[in-house]
Length: 289
Image (cartoon, rainbow, N blue to C red; front, side):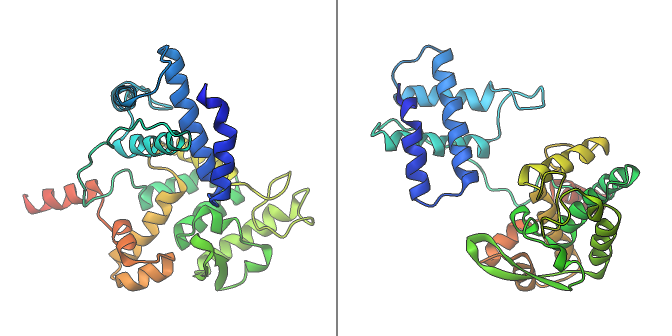
């Protein structure tokens, strides 16, 4: 079966300098596809098989942690990209068109400021200073998780921090004084007492060492669930959207927002500063009162 060649495909992705996260996503998408083939006793891959799988993803596949059926068009298209690339690697010409999507000028499932405050309150209730510091760092700086994980204990008093962002580009992140206070609070009340405190310089650590990307996700999901925030909107990248929108709502020019967020083009920033569907609905309701 073609799946026996998955390891060679992963090696080719590494040679193309794809990130470990991208490779994991490709691997997961391909394994899910072959599970579908096996469950449906499909022995040969051709265009009609891919069409059938696309429809399965759109209308039948169960969404994780939900009773909902069918994935979003963007999720389906991402999985199809993985499969197409794998089939091309194996010189199989089968292909299916992506799901057509109408461009929307609003964001959906964006975590709000009040929801973030509610999440922080849940962390405070459990005296989880690390969780508070992580959530407020994402909210107040717009850092990506990969950037947040670069912070060290030497940064807690600084008003700007140099990090390596997307595309291995160095940039400065401005640190508000309130965040310095939160970092110091976490350092003095929690980090300093951890078993590995003296072994690592990383600001965010656990009992076994530096906190991982998965560890960040677990913290966000845990307190989001306790606060009753929809899991679909409560993710680290949503805080980055919120950071950009807050700047835009306060009249900061889009060029400056792009600089602060580390975007290479303002077109990316425009996506981050769009109104959410709920915000647009509120505007419509105010106009029609």
